[in-house]
Image (tube, one colour):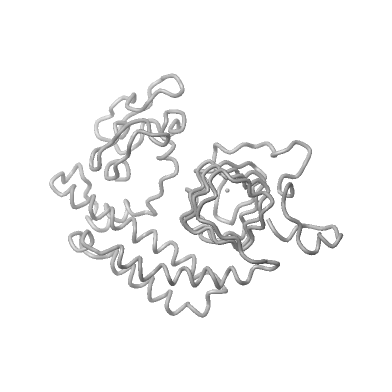
Length: 304
């Protein structure tokens, strides 16, 4: 469903234009040999399958946007639960309703993911009752019949959830050891942040396209919705970052030294070399903690 319902425009992220509700030409095809960089639509039809014919070549074929898209399980929920196992090919007359339900479900599942992450934060204990209530209400909305689901006012529901997530973030970031005045910015496009103390930073919704975060310590930094396309995370430490999703890593650059939270994986396109041969990029260019500034050696306390 993710390859049909959304629209995309030809750009650095997609090789072609595709209207909403129209299947991608690579859906249900098998790969065919072609030069690297050839636009999509060159697969061989297989008669209505749901696999991507260029899945292993998406980046080379100009479909980077597909590699970083995350529906948070909304497609599966709509197909298997909301519509009881039917799909848009089996029931073409219901396709518009399926796609409308999918759009709503994706937003609700995204909110469920963030609420669950917030609920797991020890520092957010004072908010647990309210977070549990928000989870229950979001789950209830996601279980509505298709017609009601498609009509849910997602913006209104998000407006009730976001302040709660922000409070959870503030409680967690306040606990970051050694945090100074937290860094906050909504636009760090292309900026060199290697010498900026980003521990406990507020990067919610920030545009960090192409930002240089090599060796950065993002402990306690809130990256909810941050655009990390092309951001350089080589040698960075993201183990304590807040509200990170895998697709943000998939959109960024990194290497084998980039340290990730449990449950996350290094994208296949990341490099395996260190940032600077012979050095430890996780320490390069980072502001020294107060302890180190006093002349004592040891691991830094500050840092996809």
